[in-house]
Length: 258
Image 1 (spheres, rainbow, N blue to C red):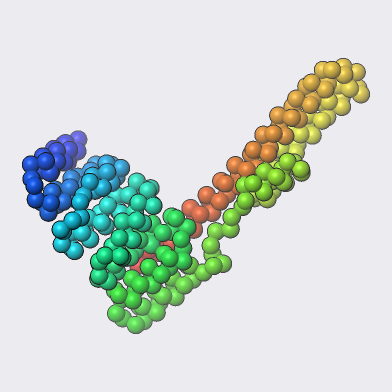
Image 2 (cartoon, rainbow, N blue to C red):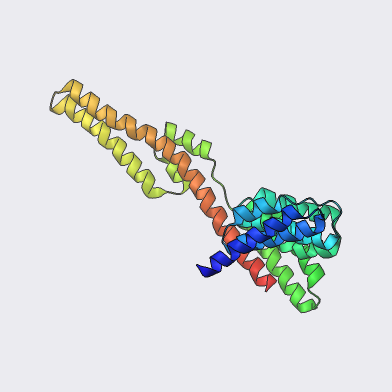
């Protein structure tokens, strides 16, 4: 608690400096320090908001880079990958290769989350070319990157609309297409139960109206739910496959950085 209070008071002091100075360099440094405090308080959203207040006019390249990178880092932690990528794109556009190479791994992380794996691979290769001198180590890292970013390893996506369409015409097929066998079995069994109840009510018990209402009502409910469920499961499978792949890539990047 005392540590949190320390960072909160420090952030307030840096904010005071921002409002009391007309020097953009001092203001930018204060905003960087304030963002550091907010990151220490596990509040990347606030840190991102702080860094977006920076005006880059008249700043040195080193301070521009520090600020852009911190802004990208806070955005990445806040899962705003578009903003993180945008900040690092500006590093590529306006700063020299030394800064571009230093930011390359963070840029690759953001690009991975945006499914821009080919661009992320380029950033990884660029980082290795600029930061690894030993030929054997370089060759080993290049091989790992090529394997990780091979087209065959990219996540295989299911089309949610196709899953929904298949389940519309063949109940359960959309769930099978999405890779969820037992969901398909459950859907088909419940539809069969609905039809079975309707048949029993009509042909066995002779309660025609009750049989139709209960049996068809159950069938209709699970039929519509199955169509929506198939679409949801396709999206879920895509998300899980993407998370698994990006987790592997993140582990590779962290290993390379170490």
